[in-house]
Length: 259
Image (tube, rainbow, N blue to C red; front, side, top):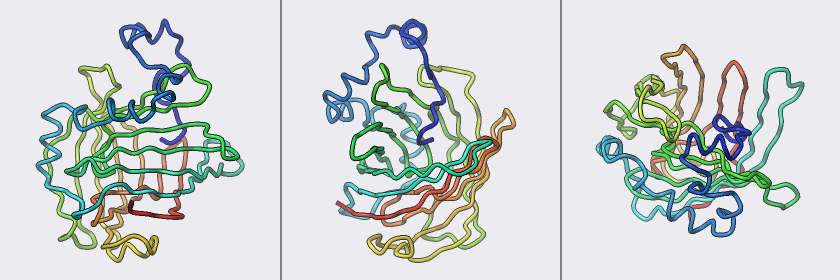
């Protein structure tokens, strides 16, 4: 997800116009970079998900502990594609902004010799469901949106009472940004592998943590495996591993600061 462009990769302005009703209405990378904070404030809020989807997620009742605001993390991604002789190692900075009720805005920044090369922006719920996203690459004309969750089947999730072997089962509908129907269905089964102190990941992380091993399958037959850790004080899941037929990813938490 960090560097893979799933949608609109290499599209011309004319192609964007066909999908997004005109390039003039879609912000360019140059305009976004000129007022990045304003772009986030306008485009990455809890007003973006549909009211029905937002209600289903809010009803789960997941909230960070009182006082949690922004979180800054330094991570390392080791990623390999088919045929790669060695994994590509990418350090990056990530900032989470708590938007309430489990909703977070996430901004990942990649740098090369201290020069900002790309930003990856996400609006998600608890680290589980991606509701909006853009890859903003230096030198590109337009940002590249990823697949996003359009709907979920109501579910229950009470991490404080989970035990090893317990399952979190979810079903979500995915589509690209302008899509209105014919969504892809993805079913996910996450099994609790471990429960313990979140400080085992980094001494700056408070509270407990739940380690999950997840299997996902779409109605098109595409399967992936993931591992993540859910931080109970922050109501936030962080990625640890990702496996698909095309690529593997391993994530390492190098530093964690609650701001």
